[in-house]
Image (cartoon, rainbow, N blue to C red; front, side):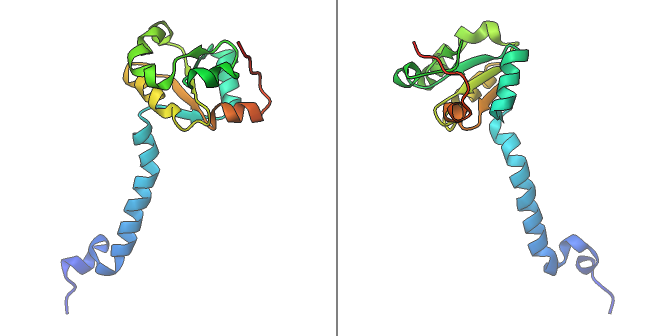
Length: 144
């Protein structure tokens, strides 16, 4: 008995279906972070310090007013995340510089970062763990 085309082709063999599905799901899981972030990169405190010290990154704190007043990074700009859609243009002169977006724990900074990226800011970063990570690392915090 001669093998059919289906049997000759590895990818079309029924016993390989589970392998094909698993490989496809794995590939999608690897690619998803690149697609979903839309060019926004999540970084740790060491990379953030390098961007601030050597690349003159602008730190944009997107927490609400009460959180910001309790302590923020030195020289940071404050634009609450809910106002980013209408106030991103205030940062227009910093478009060529890296922008580090910071929130309380890092979770909601993604929205503000995506607004900036969507409006032409190509070097947008979020701090993994947000201001909480910054504090745990005993890095400088100022209050006004």
